[in-house]
Image 1 (cartoon, rainbow, N blue to C red):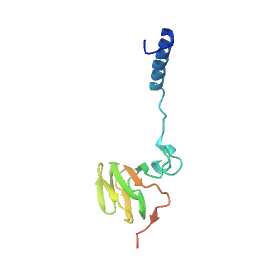
Image 2 (image 1 turned 180 degrees about the horizontal axis):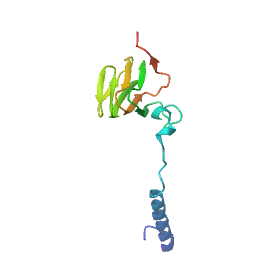
Image 3 (image 1 turned 45 degrees about the horizontal axis):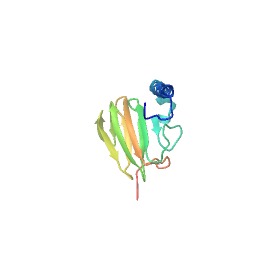
Length: 140
């Protein structure tokens, strides 16, 4: 108690108890709950609304597809897109991928997608730019 000069033993004990209670209250405060349906097409992070984290650096989505669903051919002039199949199987261009496999799509490279089975895809794109998506094949 000698480290608390000018403060009574009672004040120190009250302070210590307050700090301890504050820590306990913080640890037991409910976490903020979220639901994927509250986001557009599974897009969770990026320079758009709604978002969990507004940033121009990166976009992150967890997208769900039913068997047979497709995404039209598209490319990004600036962004790099990483798609990782979390579950199911899907075709990226003409390559069939299974859960755990993915592709890195560099800027100016066209991509098509078709779900072979029901599947989930983790998509990471950087930088975040909602205007950097063009349909069709890239031509210089």
